[in-house]
Image 1: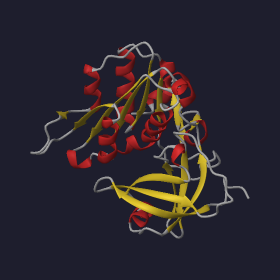
Image 2: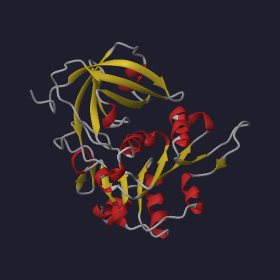
Image 3: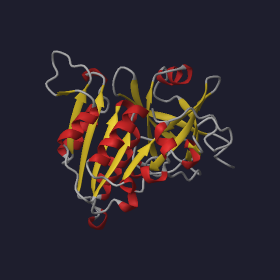
Image 4: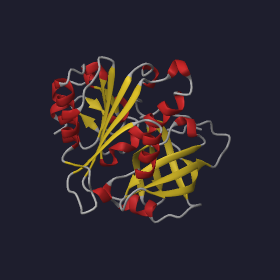
Length: 277
């Protein structure tokens, strides 16, 4: 049975609110004969009968299988239907699809993650995987830093997880566009956090967020001396099939669902980068 076309049924084991608009749905495939695995950065096509289907990044590490985390922002008919579901409800999934971050090359590297909003979700998969792999000496990364921007303090997602990451030694810097009376942290765009960032020669940068943010971060990372081969981005487009059949997710000459969603900047043309505006 081809799981690229036929959804596997999953059950929601847990629902974790991240903010007013985002919740993480922890699911498990019901049919235990299905051998499912994925790599950090890949995505699933999620479906609900009579509500449609959409591409959702996997926000958990492969090391957490058989549980799979999907961090979903309420934005339309399908995602609103999912947010109305309770523990024990079922979701259909196809996949995994797309390219992944080259985690096999991260040993003995300094990792710099730059995220905006829900863009932290696919990067979370990588961070959790690297923390797990750090228990194996030869696969350990040198350091992990995270720069994360949100519109307001209440929009910060994964706060509980971020606290746990800090306890595990990750250098975390948060910023918001607009502060409230309780916020004592940085105010401004996430690119401004890069003004105080120093990158070593062996730094790999991973970026996800709104397209305009991604382009600005790429420019700033290059100014800091990062090579195109050491900058990886993950992109979103409206996807209908996930397999390169419909062409809805094109980026110039590329398809996000099959050529991406993870790209090294060295693999992008000037026109590709221009389309990130």
